[in-house]
Image 1 (cartoon, helix red, strand yellow):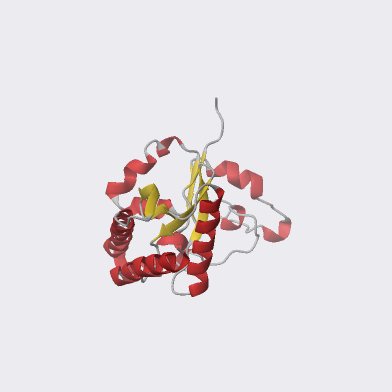
Image 2 (cartoon, rainbow, N blue to C red):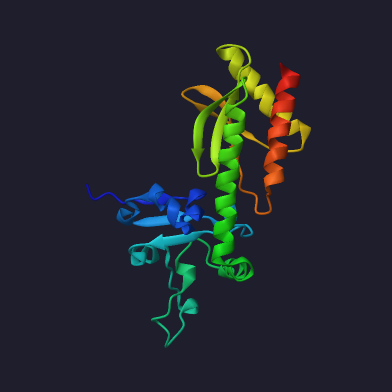
Length: 215
């Protein structure tokens, strides 16, 4: 119908540097714009967003201001990135991404993402093997959700809220909650830049230990 199509790949977009995950955004070539945030998974410092625009002149026409004191005479053809975002001033945001690539390389960043995905899948399998846990949503890249079998109906939702709060109050790991089909679920995502396999093992120990204490 000719509608503008924007793809917000804020978190998962970073995984697209790995060829084996690109099927997740099949059809993305039909988008008018795409954004993803390397500070969410690639390890860049906040803030760092990458933006792809099919027709950047539409963005520039919307955001550009051209008072006389901002004109650079004789350089009308240059790209002025103050016209690509809301603030008139702009920092050298690309430098942090350049340093990240120089320090770790594309293959190093791919290895990190592949590890995170594998570790999350492994943790989901371990929790699924526990009699008192259910996997609610299977791993999608390095994110999945689970529930602990405590109580029934609304009581079970309350139990899982108490569990995620107890885990966070414990302080060793931090998890968040969501709702899937109207039921509370606990989210797990491996994504910290310096995370190790031992950290994921520790997360399993914390989750199961605190769940036992609440039962």
